[in-house]
Image (cartoon, rainbow over all chains, first blue to last red; front, side, top):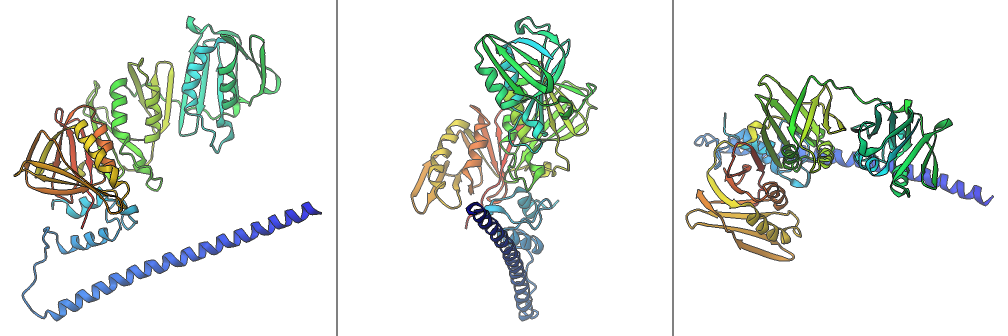
Length: 115
Length: 379
């Protein structure tokens, strides 16, 4: 009888663990979804601010498109994404840069001499 | 199947084959060692599905003293079998397979009986024709492996980067590996027709294992390439590895062709300095050392800083320095790996900017060996 109890409690534990695991999965999914949305909104917000700035500038002198590194607007955007911790290279585009380690494919994409 | 053999020779070959046998395999029969006995001799085979090693003991080799009583084949549990063989009392041993794959191992007064498995269930090794063969010097191959596998990625999420990309064309073998943080490229000349062309990716792990079988006594290695397998033959041992499928990223474009700052170091001297600087950087969160080059003052200084522990500053001893001023930060561990692969040589390091990868090359033979390290951006 004792053994049966033991087995039953194992069974129960197993079920609980599985339940917990599936709960964890759901939470993880939700969290990554939220984070993604957050990033998207932030970028969207950034864009809107930029647009606003541009509009506010009226027709003031047309600003120079390159920054101090000689990067074009689109390259600057890539650089920003890269610095936020995402790959911008063709090989791993959009995936997270682990531990913020540098990637030579990305730096090549961003800073390559424009050939 | 029954044979008698000198234990020392058998153990030597068994050790080679065992490199391929893993206890953590999904196919149970692969935890075993396959033995195939013919009138010509005894073949030992080990495999983990990625790597397979086959070793042949010829009946004609007098040193082995191989006596064949009856031919056949068997698969025996590798771990037990090798432990048993290593501890047997006499110089020779006899292996005899009885009914139901029961195998008797005798040496002197000691007798083991272990359960074997049917060798027919063991996966077949691929057959690779000898039409596509290349002869390589064992020393050069070993060096090439040690210089490139350091840059191989260990992240399974990027399978293609866990291999070494080998391109054979124009009588040259170009081997490249990168984990996207650093890159290592080695070129060797081969005595083959210029129209021989191959483009393959060999898993870094396979090359590391292969390199271990290239002991000092080995002169040349034969390499054969097939559709999805590569085979290396060293004496009586054949080493098979699967190839990685897919397209390796174009790495040619990553290697800078020009530079703005150049410095020359004695590799061991710089290595010692980097090792000192990294003592503290390892404690810090981002593991970075900073190098400041000032050609105008003719100084090169390295800094390591860890907010919790302290900092280090060292003025570096270099051979030559020219070009523009530069301040650049990088991961010292990549630098250490790269510098070790140069041995005692003098090296040239060339920088383009604080954001672009920099190159390390031996001062002699610029063409043949190049390492690339991406800097870390600091604010």
